[in-house]
Every structure is written in structure tokens, then in C-alpha cells.
Length: 122
Image 1: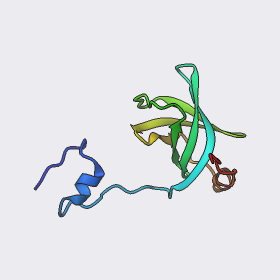
Image 2: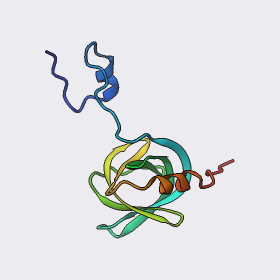
Image 3: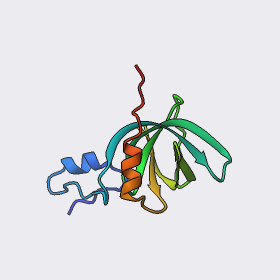
Image 4: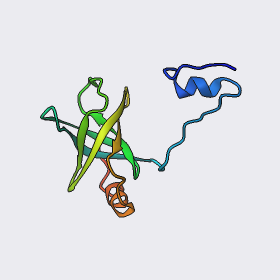
């Protein structure tokens, strides 16, 4: 039996015969491009950016700044127009912060957020 450390990416694990991709999401993620703000509750600051993925259980937030600070398990509030969703950061990647919502959002909320006008950069 081959032992693969958890630090090895899912992509690499999926390339090893017999390993497959054991990771699966509970909720389907949707691609979006919505201006948002991430408030860091315990640290007392916020950052502007883009919500570029969302699901009932979480999302991905890309800061507007060129640098992404490594964060993990920070309590945050994701603000998208009239919505404020409590979450925490589960990972940091070059694509942004992976967020898990404290409580899953309702289907109606998900639909309303997805229907917000897409960020028009050009």
C-alpha cells in the first residue's frame, strides 16, 4: 500500500494509479464574478475583492490586492451587497481564500447572489 502525505495535492494523488480523487464536495459550486468584502472579525479589518465561486456551503474570495496573505481558520463575514454570511477560512491558494459558511445558505439566497450583476472589468 502506498502512503501519500496529506500535503500532496489532490491533483498529484489523482494521477497515481489506484488513488483516484477521494475528495468530493457536499454542495455544487457555481462560478461567479461579484464584488464583495471580507471582514476579519477578530482582527478588526476588511478587504475588498471578488467572490468567484459560491455554493450552499462555502465559496472562494479573491482579494483585490496583488498579494494574498496566508490565512487559516480566521472567522470572517463575507459581505455581498445586502448579504452578510458568517464563515471561516479553510485554505489559502493563489486563487484566493476558500471559505466554509458557518451555516449553509438557503437555495433562495444562493440564487439571489448568483443573479447579482457580474463584475464587468472591461
